[in-house]
Length: 114
Image (cartoon, rainbow, N blue to C red):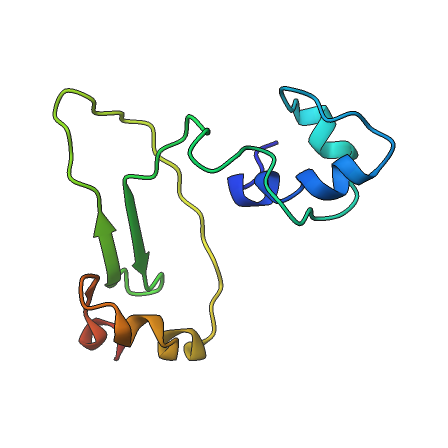
């Protein structure tokens, strides 16, 4: 069973506050025993081997690209493993102030409208 990395990373503090000893490595069965979301990360930021190279938002019914940001690609270090996560967001999400403030993000509001 795969769990989102943010969910796993945010479970640490509650796990540590229980009678459990914090392991050096979290196994899936360790995570499955956790009953609540943690207030901190299981893996310190920057210490995870997972690297996010692209984030895009797509309107699923039409397939229209709404938002995309990518890291510059290093041709020598190309990984073909991909993961897709779907979120059900309300229309209010598109009014989030971040979209207006971040001019360096490739945000095309015309793509978000019918």
